Image (cartoon, rainbow, N blue to C red; front, side, top):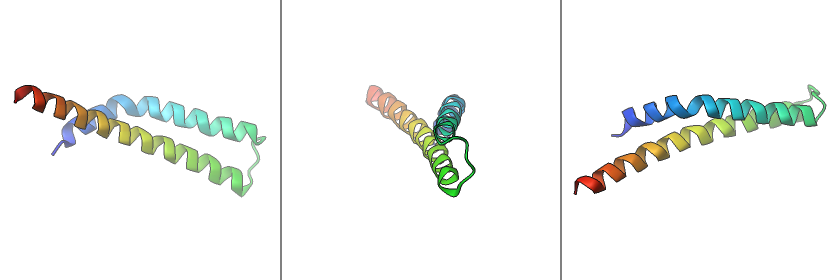
Length: 75
């Protein structure tokens, strides 16, 4: 399994993903006037969750790509 490289990449990528996700959530809240209505809450939450999901997916992608590159080099 490629758990350790995924965790290492996640440690590298997660701070950037968190900042970008938070920024996107704040931008949506700002665009809607910082109202506390349910649609704004759902939109901000969905954007932050999607951003963090993309971050986790990117770290997994980088880990698998590195493993495939090193495996191809050793053959």
